[in-house]
Length: 121
Image (cartoon, rainbow, N blue to C red; front, side):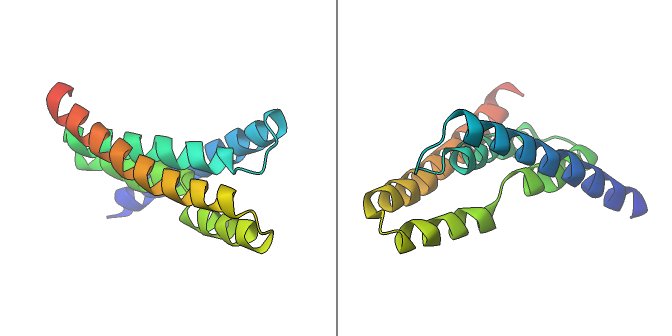
């Protein structure tokens, strides 16, 4: 049990650091109203989590990468906050695009990852 906690915690530290560095870099490189950093991080995370689960990886790998890393790399709370901010700023077209693309791409990419994981890994 203790090793499982360490695996999740270690993965979480790496995931949150990856998100912080990538998000900050993207926001500096491509400043825009559309929350591109969170969108790409969450979309990538959806695909990679689907791929991991589809691969049938062993439990310790799923705990380290799936629960730990992907759990802290992706961010549902930031996604929700950014949607509220877009609404308050009355950027409704951007809000609609962000919501639509995030949900559709997230589901499609998770499904694609799952399918590829079953087929090739």
